[in-house]
Length: 64
Length: 406
Image (cartoon, chains in turn yellow, blue):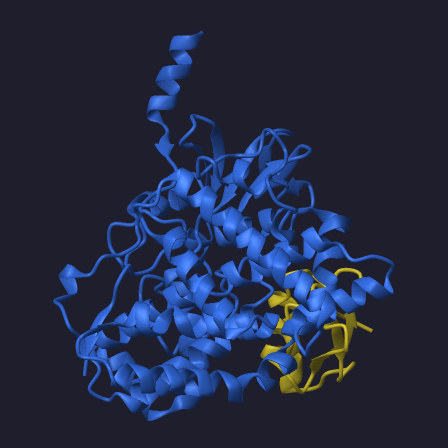
């Protein structure tokens, strides 16, 4: 599973960072950075939750 | 067929739908959600709109780029008479812009409210909260918590973020009080809006000449680098940050304090373990969903929402309150439950307009609840619960006054 971000869609709400700061961060512009591109174990559930909560549909978790 | 039209209108539910109980959602929302989740309602000016009440549909409405937020459109639904006309007098707030125009206005500001930037504000927010509690403790009891604490705390926080001097914060508080007062008429509201606008224009001017370490100065610098300073847009941005960041937070402070004073078992939970406060804050945000009347849209094209066709030119109102009480998404939604994970609520909206200051709002509420109940362990209502006056007739729900003693 790979976490993908879309900076064109990101609105910097920071919901992903609040959900799991170990997996997500915001860059200098406030846009999402993915710290753990291939989440494992418990991180998969956290990543999935962040994908669901993201207001801008800027995140996706894709099968590889 | 004019008569048929009139008859049809008579059968429609009027919007806004007022709350009659601080805890329960009006039964008509639940009836709509269960029986016809997208239903026509009639607005104060006689216009009609589709009211959307299911969580998934509300998110779909707020995320759909074909459903416009642009209140400058003549057909845009009017929920508060005069509001769209008043907005049209100013450089547009970013909340009424769509697509690329909206992104261009929002993008430069988002880093100001990132999770990290907001977390760095915590020590100062703590100082401000403690400072207002110190002042409150000197006052004769009882006090109206709303006036002496709930309003000034977030007002000072956003004033400092913008780089407004302390006198500016006091002046803004004075004008905002008139704006928020129930008895202020439309003329009075317009006069205050014009005053506020003039003040913001002056503030922008001052910051152009004397920049500081603040949001406004950074926006000016950004615009300067990009070729030109748009003063009216900057004044609008300041006004939006002040208006959106002050009364909303105050209402949530009041409702949170009220909830915990009247349901001591909730207070006991966060007192026993302050690490539970962030969850409690999101649950309070979900439960009260104070800005229920904000998410209006106009269809720029035919759009399908939850299998229902909304036609081009029709108005849509997404009820975030109904969405946040949807049992398909939240178990026992009518229960205020601090143990619940409610982070996916839509009290801050959803889609590209989702609240820019939400992380700041969350942090302010956390600091306030943890500090207030720690420093005033005997805090209690100074009037019987039945005498409290709730803002069921206002744009944003809350309490008009919260008399407390300790």
